[in-house]
Image (cartoon, helix red, strand yellow):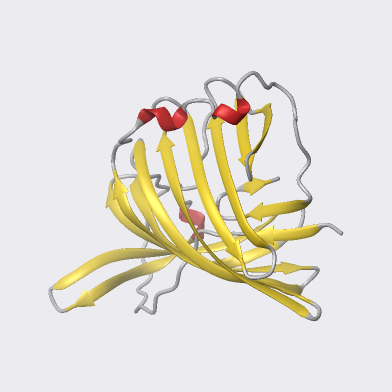
Length: 228
């Protein structure tokens, strides 16, 4: 039986919101950031809580994007996932639990960490007194082939059209039935790539140009924009 799993980069915060205006924004051209999160898959008679963490490497200059993810489900067990999106070379390399697949990749770059002004909800401050950090709140509201997604994201404005996603909290629905709740926090951001070899073709994928495996379940990583 096919099993559907999800892992989202998400989080939660209680703040005072003051409506304002912003522009479209994206992270710095080069970014390395970590995330930790948890959630629960909900099904009739059986729920499957999970926790996980990931590392994201965003190189807009060389048009490469990496997601390195580990998730542990209470019932389904552990899952490791490494995805290299090479927009310059036109290929995506996916290593799921040690097995590789390669597929064509189109588009100019992965914009998953960018924010649209149309989703802007308001401004906020975190902290106390003079020791505060300005934040912006954005809504999450989109659909894919399997789920309808709704929630909120907290974003740190850097300057001009640059910003940095800090947290998200997302609910997933299918045919209006609640399926999952996921949240996480992003941290330890660096405006550089410490080790550029992370963008090398994975060892498991070398000399492989076609699909080499079929996973025994689907993986929906909504905040990571992955559908396997």
